[in-house]
Length: 326
Image (cartoon, rainbow, N blue to C red):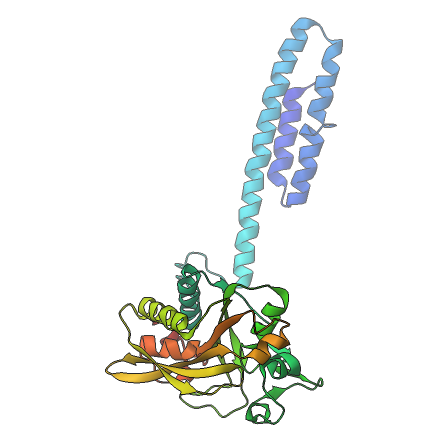
């Protein structure tokens, strides 16, 4: 058991090693479970107690020395391999790193979250619906007959699958929700809608709407006005005057247009009204037992008013000079 020769030979092999895989072989050869040092430990049982202590101590010391030499050689080979890869890739790791800019939510997303937060505090549930609708939910169930202008090719994006379309408003979710839930309830429905029309500073082929629906035994337009006053106060951060004007929507009766007074002038912001009896019937609810109001507002328009933006197309063109302001 010439431990000194074993150590010297191991040192020579480790120093000459140029590949990591060869270094792993040396590890197994000398200090692995079946390595030369392990065989020495296995042979100690045949020696006297004094020899076992002496040789065992030497074997442990040499084992640790060989382990250390292999680890140091491993670090050296890894550094050489890394440097080689860096040279081949052309990456200079000594260059200062580039600062990674943090992103943020899109302004329309921020406005939507704020709207949902305000209505949520007033007891409204947030409900979503599909972007692709069928003719029944988008038109028929909402008391919109086949000869209504909204069904014209220039307003509606029809799909190749018969009777399927990209929804033109968020109102179909009213029907979906009333079919599956019993009143009383109050919900708001945020989501994208699609119109087949030319784009300009105030029109887009897609935009966001927020639908509102409240149904109970004794609901009136007075309840709607109180809720809207509270909403606009929180949304714009100040008292906002609101007025109702007569309007027309097939799915409400009576129908109203709502204006708010901002910057010393009145601006239309939403349409609303009491849910039409035919809409209740389409959702299999008895209009004699329930009544409620519905409203729809453009989220993009609210964002434009809040941030004084004069072109709706800015929300969708991906210009960072615009988006980074929010």
